[in-house]
Length: 465
Image (cartoon, rainbow, N blue to C red; front, side):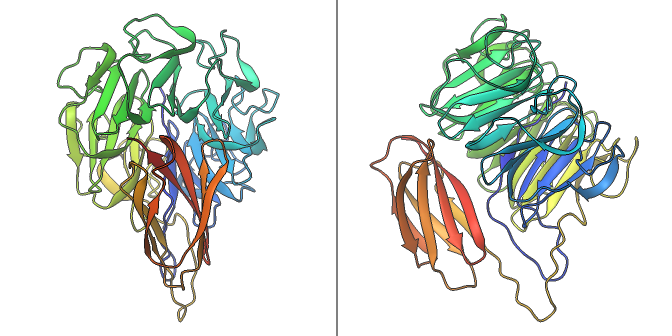
C-alpha cells in the first residue's frame, strides 16, 4: 500500500545566512518533496524510477534540486513518480511511467520533469502514493491519468490512460485526493464522493462493492477537507471533528478498535482539527493550536511517539509545536512549522528523513529536522524580511480577519477568486490586519491572492455556514 496527499502552506519566513525553510511539503511512498521560497522544488529519498527529478536514479539522503522547475505552487508524490503544479496552471511529472503516470501520451519513464498533456487551468493536484494522479481544474472538473485497474480514474472502465481523462459526472469540486486504488472528491456543498476499490469499505457507501464512477459517501455533510490512506479515508467536518471509514486492521480509523467500517465513524476525541494527512496505514491530524496527532500503523515509528506500537486512538506527536502543514509517506511522516523548518520521522530505508543517513536501522521514532533544504543567502548587513499571511477563522461564515506581517510598507493588492477562477472582488490593503466581509457570497472554496513587495501569495478560504 502506498499513499499521500499534499497539504499546502502559503506563508514563509526568510532567515539570515543559510536557512532550511520551505513553504510547501508533500510525500510519496518512499520519497519527499518541498517547494522552496523561490518556488523551485527539492526532493529526497527513494529514486528507483527518477522520482526525485534530478536526472538520476540514485537515492538521496539529503534534498536535491528537481531539474528545470520554476514557478511551482504545489507538489505531490506517487508511488514512484512525482507531479508539480506551475503558477500558469500547467502540470509537470517525472519518474515511473509504466501505467501512464506521467500523463504525457507515452509510457516511457523520465528522470526529469515533462509536461502532462493538455492540462491547463489546474488549481490542485493529488497523487497519494499510487500509480495514478488527479488534477482539479478551475471550472470544478476533475481529470485523471495512470493506472486504472480498480476504476480509480472514475471514467466507467478499468483501462489505464497515459493522458488525462475527465472523471465522470463530477462538477463543482473543491478538493481531490488520490489513494492507492481509490479516489475522493469534495464538492462545494460539503458532500464527499468516492470511486475505485471498495474491498474494505473505502468508498464509505455502506457496501463493499467497487465503483468505476463516483458515488456519494454516506451521511457526510459539512465537510471541509479530505485525505486517504491505502484503504481508508478521512474527512474533517466544519465543526473540527474528524470522520473515518474503510480498513482498520492497524487502528487507522482511530475509534478505539480494529474493526473495518464501510460507513463514516467519528475519530476518537479529536476536535479543532484544521488539516489531515494519510500514509500507507496511518493518519496525521493538525490542531488549530499547532500540535500534531497520529494513529494507526507504527512499525517504523511513523507516529512519532518514541516507540513502534500501533495506536487505534490519536496520540500527540511530541515535541512538535507551531506546526502549520503535515504530510505522510508510506511509513514516514513530515511536518512544517511556522518558521519554515521541516521535520520528519519514521522509516529511513531510502533516505526519506533527509538528514544525511540512509538504510535499515536509521529510522527515527521521534521528529528530527531536515537540514540544508532550501538555502537562501542573505548578506550579513542586509535585513531579513519575514512575511506571513493568515486568515482567521478559516473556515468562516464569510467574515474573517486577514493579517499580513511584513517589514516593508504595506501597499498590498488583494484579489478574491471563486472556485471557477472568476474574480469577485479586489481592493488595496494598507493595514496589517483587516476585516474582510464576503458574507453575501455562497458557501465554498475561495482564493485570496495578495501581492506584496516580496511577491505574490495565495491563501485558500473556506466559507461554510
